[in-house]
Length: 95
Ligand code: SF4
Image 1 (cartoon, rainbow, N blue to C red):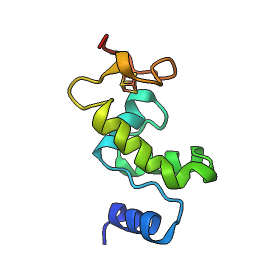
Image 2: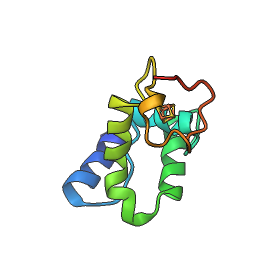
Image 3: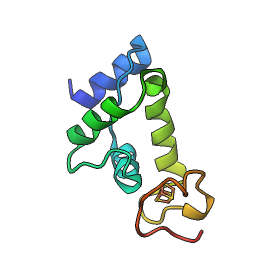
């Protein structure tokens, strides 16, 4: 079983606070600089270190949804993003 799958199962089925880094989370973590890293594992380790325990269960859903609907791959919707003032992405868009 892959690490990501294992983390998703631990998180959703057993309520364990883990972060399963997928393509959306990887992108958001790097653009915002919340947890920059060259590999999925590097990002995962940083997120697990920096996200407080009480938010870990929900954090991966929030990050995935943010990446899927706002911080989208080709053209992020920075103008409509609620964390635009906190995000360190250098190429923010107007829309
Ligand atoms: S400001 Fe832009 S790049 Fe930063 S998180 Fe929001 S949508 Fe993504």
